[in-house]
Length: 247
Length: 44
Image 1 (tube, chains in turn yellow, green):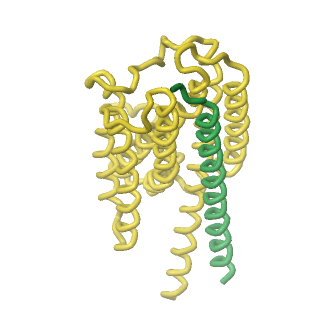
Image 2 (spheres, rainbow over the protein chains, first blue to last red; image 1 turned 90 degrees about the vertical axis):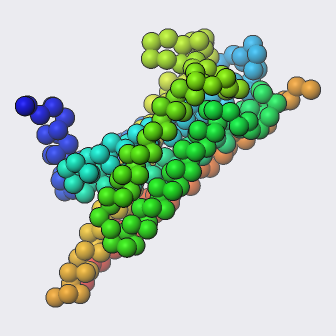
Image 3 (tube, rainbow over the protein chains, first blue to last red; image 1 turned 45 degrees about the horizontal axis):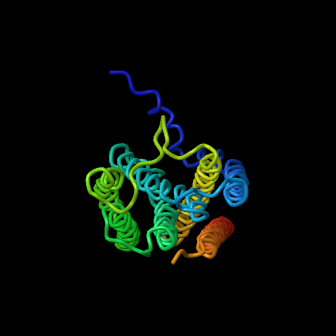
């Protein structure tokens, strides 16, 4: 059976030297382009769009809340995909990628909860509600923290990374729960307002969201690359010192 | 009573900006420290 087109590409990238050759010039490019797009989107969202007829100016929080929610969930998807790649092909870079995603993913999941809570106070009249969407997102945040603790514990006992990888895959069960929570349960959180083909938000309000979504995504990718480079360099230095100590 | 939304909007943007800057600095510092340790291990 022929391999899917992306498998040879993944194998080629899994070489750390080749990965670093690509990651070094790519990191500042993604970082600064991400910052520029996100900054423009935030400026446009704060100054160039009309207030919502119901929410008023509080609607401007969506330009940062939606990207943080998207990245909190996309981050865990990245951990799950990297964990599968690590368990199937044993590529050390897949393990490094999953570990590098955890911290920014947790931070964005946390920022989603905080910005949502800040938006909820003037809009819903409450900081927090134990409804399906909010509670499942809070669970994802705790799962991120548990994953980071598990990775650290596995490293400390000299584990091979299999247990965090299994946890990374198992945790992905939360993603459809978060996605469909507004459909399955009668929640305070509004239903899906942005889809792949249609949206219930007027384009005059929504357009800066495309810039903040793209900008924060590139920024997230740059942070993951920076953290991957740190993990690779740290592992190399440790291995070299250990080799020298045994000679 | 309808609340003025601007303090909430400002707080949300400020928290995200501070978190993004802090994460960038911490990640960058960790990378520089690890790459310096790698250089030192090469020389040692």
